[in-house]
Length: 126
Image 1: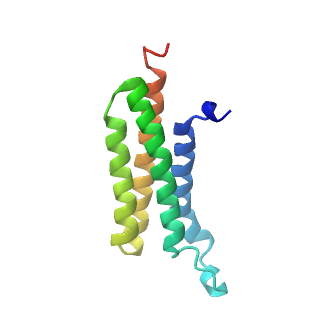
Image 2: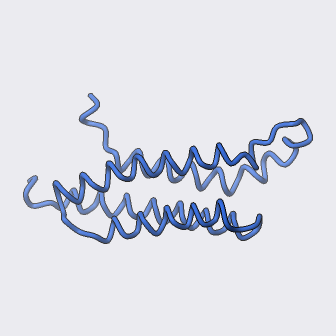
């Protein structure tokens, strides 16, 4: 069963969840700090999302590159997306941080979609 899991789909879902977290959570949970919950500013939660995307992405994109399509663009997009997440999370302030992290998550999603598409187009696997 584990062999049939499409890591690109998992990566797309994880990256979309990250983008949703960055975009909607501040709007939906602006009152959490009043209750003592620091979920939005918790760097451990942010780092957890980034590490999850990094681990899933490395497996999915490496397998796609090595076994199927040998194209570097999905890998480059992934590196750019992870870099934007790290840059936005650790080097920018609030308003800029959210925008950069959403763009980074969407770039990661596009890298998984492109990898998935290239894997489906693989002539060796047909």
